[in-house]
Image 1: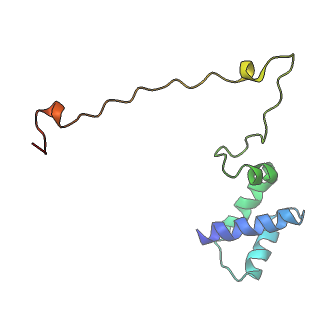
Image 2: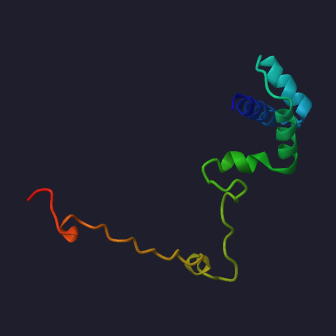
Amino acid sequence: MASELACTYAALILHAEDIPITAEKLTTLVKAADVSVETYWPSLFAKFAEKRNLDDFILNVGAGGGCAPVAAEAPTGGASPAAAAPAAEEKKEEPKEESDDDMGFSLFD
């Protein structure tokens, strides 16, 4: 876990400074922080960073989907936002909890 965290912080530092994220630069930063990581972590983070837009991940930390857009596009053609919204999820009926009375006994009788 420490290796992943160290590479994450190193990638964020490089991204904040607009420096391309490469395995060599990640390794350099991690070594400068005096943290030892497995040799494959920097290359995995570099491959991930070259195929993704890190700004999307940073802005959607709690979204749970990773690459979800920050804001939905406005509907075109004069449609109302309610009409363009996806259908609401179906409500699932929760099973009724059985009470002690339903089982034929009560703890407080």
